[in-house]
Amino acid sequence: MELTSIIGWIVFGFIVGLLGRLLVPGQQPIGCIATTLLGIAGSFAGGYLGSILFGGAGGPTGSWILASIGAALVLAVYLLITRRSR
Image 1 (tube, helix red, strand yellow):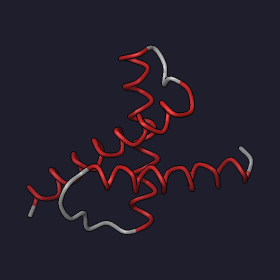
Image 2 (tube, rainbow, N blue to C red; image 1 turned 180 degrees about the horizontal axis):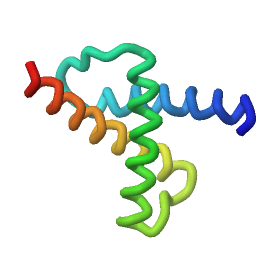
Image 3 (cartoon, one colour; image 1 turned 180 degrees about the vertical axis):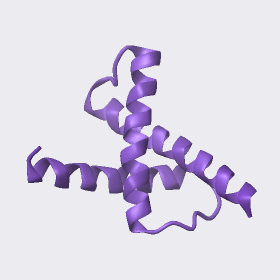
């Protein structure tokens, strides 16, 4: 894997993580690195859901939308788990 590919995933993950955080109401006590990891995990989750529901992600725009929805779902699950443990 090339360095530019890794940097691209990091930037994409951060942007998608921010979009996912906008979709979930309330406070999310996570930083920039966790937001990036959230976006990367969300893009995988969104891609998986897209392949199940639609047989694909639907091009570049669909990829961004599904990745953001996936990030919001991953964040919601994370918040449920961490709030119950408190």
